[in-house]
Amino acid sequence: MNKKILTILLSALCLGANAQDTTSLHNEQENVAKIFERCYTADNDSAKISGLNAATDNLESMLQDPSAFDYNFYKLKNVSSIYSENREIRVLTFGVELQSGNYLYSGFIVTNNNGNIVITRLKDDFDKQENPQKSNMQANNWFGAIYYEIHQVGSKKYPVYALCGWDGADLFINRKVLEQIIIQEDGTPIFGGNFQRENSFKNTRIIFEFTEKAAMGLRFENSVKNMNGEKRRKVIVADHLTTPPEYKGNPRFSGPDMTFEGYYFQDGKWKYESILDIKLEQ
Image 1 (cartoon, rainbow, N blue to C red):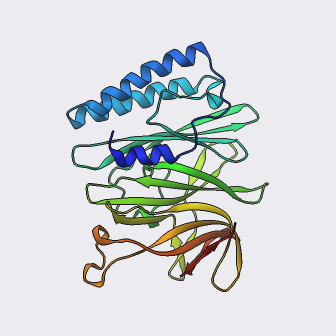
Image 2 (cartoon, one colour):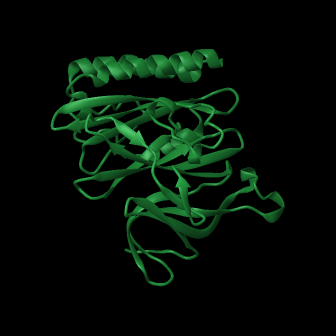
């Protein structure tokens, strides 16, 4: 597996802590693990895509088992699995690198409302649309990524969830994505929020692009203070990216500049704060 994708997977939360093992699920995951192995070692894109689809189909079948929500798929080391704090949502995402250097992703949003399990399959919009940060992208045309953090914001009665994800993009750039989901009454997710950028709220998600040679942080912090001493709660903190003037608009030359910016949820919107020197509270 490509080192980039492996690094993201290792940084994700442990797969299904406190999970309950069953013989049936154990045997099935053995089969899925073999499908994934064939997928990653295939020597052509057709076989890779076919393998990814087969693994997704088999995993979806496994998730139908009532005990699968808490099951630790410990043999599926290429699958990132994270739970929301209230343990009502499980997000499983995975992908394969194609010969072009682009990545194709797949996954599931699984909700558990007092034992009522709803499984939503995610279909990667591989071309990412022309302007994905302003597009209405849902589960059937999803901005494919490997999610490594999920956090609840908003009220307990009307929860909103922030997802932090990684996309290998291509041979030259990586992406990080800040995504919002809410869960409808039927248990299915709705993607997209109202994100501020440059004094407008027209973004449905935030996408960061930067050189493949750099590492960019995008993470949740319970509390931060900006340079003015103003406190913000439940903030998604991002390394601020800059590009040399001569390469403006070319993410191949973009990288962190040791300053930070943040997004916090307030009044139904994600407000942006351009912060030059954010100080994380201990």
